[in-house]
Image (tube, helix red, strand yellow):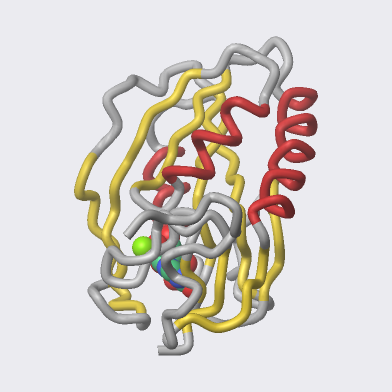
Amino acid sequence: MELDSSTSASWADFDPALGEILLTSTQIQEKIAKLGDVIAKDYRNRSLLMVGVLKGALFFIADLARAVNLPVEVDFMAVSSYGVTTKTSGVVRIVKDLDLDLTGKDVLIVEDVVDSGLTLSYLVRNLRARNASSVEVCALLVKDGMQPDGLEVSYTGFVIPRVFVVGYGLDLAERYRNLPHIAVYKG
Ligand code: IMP
Ligand code: MG
């Protein structure tokens, strides 16, 4: 069947597991443009290295890096803190490490969502131990009230309720990442 390009219907529109659209792709892009401007101001004349946390931050870092009007280096890390369910396992493990040396770099960790904050707390500690000039965090989503003590998120896209969301990189068991918007997962 051919998709009718005259409608905005997407493959997920009739998926009963998906709830309300929390953030449209337009809202996401408008926010990224603003974040990009602020980051470009803050990092002028510094050595900005954006570190994307795979795989959830895949689209976010791609869009954010292009919204920052400065030379930017990009690298990726993959950590696992979740299995195939919507609950944290409480374990953070580096699955793929950085390729680049952080010495003298101003590192900005780019993360999809802060839920328990466990993943980011671990990553910040780990990267701070590697001679970077600075290590800051940019998260597209922060779940309401979930930022743990000692974890400072310098740049936040949206504060959202404590629900499980999918789309724009965020998955459930590897599904839904390519939704252009962010929707509530009802299960
Ligand atoms: P934390 O360590 O509990 O903060 O979890 C962070 C990681 O868990 C994120 O990078 C996501 O990969 C995943 N995660 C947390 N909440 C959600 C969600 O609502 N949808 C999809 N993935 C999530
Ligand atoms: Mg994930």
